[in-house]
Image (tube, rainbow, N blue to C red; front, side, top):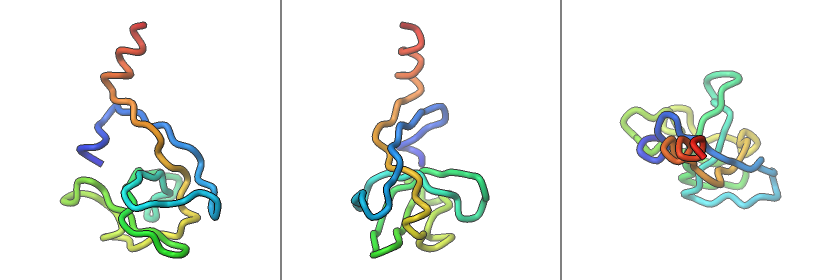
Length: 96
């Protein structure tokens, strides 16, 4: 998800409640990796359908996203990203 997320950044996300939360294009979500069991990934929603979403990474040249695995069922969404804490912000917080 470069350049939005960099190694060492932390994300805060709220659990996604299927049929209750509204999904919008452009928001970041935490999803189950469709090709690797027990792996989560962060992607940006690019298209919302009735029961599916298409997700893209911000670095399209190397991203593994809906261009490779197609749309995903909304039930595969684990959470909606609410905040990104950069590595620098986290390091400053640890020093307090």
